[in-house]
Amino acid sequence: MKLYKIAKGILLEHHNAAYIIDDEWDSLINRDDLAGYLQAISTDTTPIDNAVKSEYLNGQISPPIGSQEVWAAGVTYLKSRDARMEESETSGGASLYDRVYDAPRPELFFKATAQRVAGHGAEVYIRKDSEWDVPEPELTLFINSKGSIQGYTIGNDMSSRSIEGENALYLPQAKIYEKSAALGPCLLVTPEPIALESAIRMTIKRDGVAVYEDATTISRMKRSLTELAGYLYRECDFPAGCFLMTGTCLVPPPTFTLQPGDVAEISIDGIGTLVNTIALNPKHK
Ligand code: DO4
Ligand code: MG
Image (cartoon, rainbow, N blue to C red; front, side, top):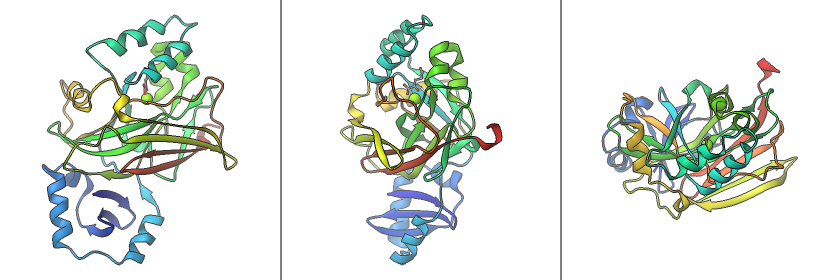
């Protein structure tokens, strides 16, 4: 079952039929047994017309977030560890990444407030004081206020590799700025955990041509999803739940950096495709 935030409200898609839910986003997604509740709605409600459904889904889709914070995990895949060690070789920070990859405690960091999050089809920004930038495709969890994983979406953890590589203490500046995160296009709600064999793919297009393309599976993650959620909720309360990006599994080669106008497409099996155009923030050009 997929929940979309559309101009008309909330659209539930289940078995190709769609329903409009008259509810407030935060209280809806933070319900206990969200999957069971949505299942009951699809049984008791009349679906909307297919043409109307297409019209809604081809219109503006907002990121599937209300008042929640977005957090992120790092160095959860070997690929991320190796890329980070490489980019921080000259700053002497390489061993930090090596150690956290093997440590019991994961790297978790605050990523964004909802205001800084772009949705499907919207622009994400690169910083003008950064020379080396990448999108990071990440399976993103929605964890409710009780700490239970209730849904999944696609995340893009936009990152400045030059700023992070210069000094690991610059991580918040490399990661947190306007529209440095994207979520969407929907929130996938399933009674069972997402299949670990699910593939994640990323394509970056420049002038319509793919300049980077790769894929892997969630199963390559070093840690479990419940382990990451458990650490995040150890000493933090999230009254409306929380989104947690689970770390990047794909990193473009060191010669690659994003340019304004590039388009990042990230797909995860069962969820869909999140598409964002890269831009400079017009306020800070
Ligand atoms: O350690 C820095 C950030 C790591 C990260 O964002 C990732 O692995 O996805
Ligand atoms: Mg990341």
